[in-house]
Image (cartoon, rainbow, N blue to C red; front, side):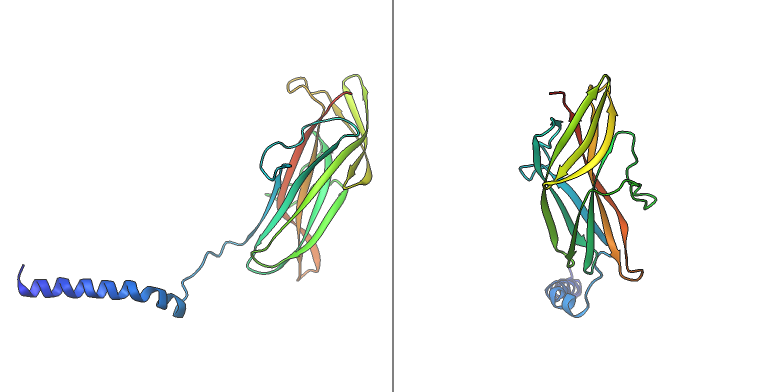
Length: 200
């Protein structure tokens, strides 16, 4: 290597080291763009704060849970949230997140809360199927309690011969307050819990 080539290689190495050393300072002066993806998380965890051991085989009068419903705010701003708790049989409509349409079912219970950007909210939810009857290949649920509040539901489910059960779903639907329109709007997130009503 000639002296000129050696000097050029040395200069490149020194310049590279200087740029690496200056990078943390430069990032404070010229902030690099961060991810612009803005979203909210909604989740449902089982009794041990894990995605397992969810209540499934349910008998009338037995308290189920708690399960834990949670929300995290990654909107880049504060958010005013609403979580509706709804109950359905296997034929009734779920929310359509693709079309931003909520389930048409009436909510039984709700949570409202504010979250700053980056904050998380979580709440335990216990429920009891209060009143169940059976007639041949149908089960009838007339009431369910959520957090010790009893709600009439009057739903039936037909026996599913493939999966061998009477299936219903407790689900949680996320809404977000629109400050421009001053109304809550469905926020395209929902999570659900299937249960099988057992004969006593």
